[in-house]
Length: 193
Ligand code: SF4
Image (cartoon, rainbow, N blue to C red; front, side):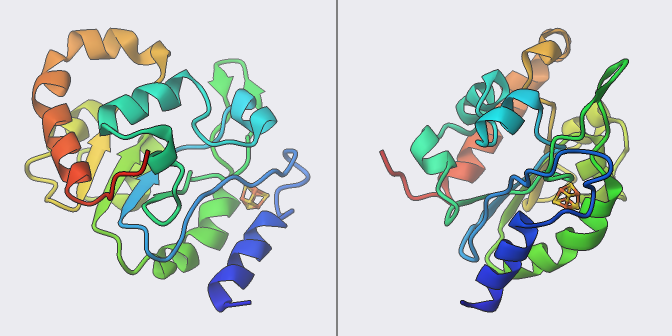
C-alpha cells in the first residue's frame, strides 16, 4: 500500500467524531486530480446513499461544470473534499456545521497529496474561510470577485435548489461566471462517457 492509500484507508476508518455523529466519511481523490471541489459536508440523503453529490445539488453542479457523472466521479480528475467528511446531523435551522475536527485532522495532509491541483472550486462559507481567507467572506461578494481571485480558484454559490432565489437575484452568475467556469474545467478534464 502506498502512503497515499494508507492515508485514505485511515480517513475512511476515522471515528474521531463518533460522539457527535454517525461516522461515514465521504471523500473522493487521487493524486492526479487537477480539480478540487471543496464543499461543506454531506447531507442526509448522501449519508444514506454513500455517494457524494448524489442529489439535486449534484445534478446542478455537474451541469454548471459541463461534465457527465462519469467524469465527475472519476477521482483521477475530480477530488471532492467536503470540509467535514461525515453528515453532521441537523438542527433547528437545517444541517449542522461540518465538524471542525475534520479539517483540523485531515485537510492539510490530503491537500498535500494533490500536487497536480490547478483549480479549486469553493462551495460554502467554511470552505471559503479555509481556502480563501483573504477573500470577502460574503459568498455573494466572493463569487463576484472571480476575476480578482485568480485563475486557480473560483467560489460558487451552493447548487442546492434552496438557492434558487439567490440564482434568480444574481443573473450575472449564469451570464458571466458559468461560461468562465465551464471553460476552466474543460481545459483540465479529459472527457469520458
Ligand atoms: S467528520 Fe471527519 S474527523 Fe469527524 S469522524 Fe468523520 S472523517 Fe473523522
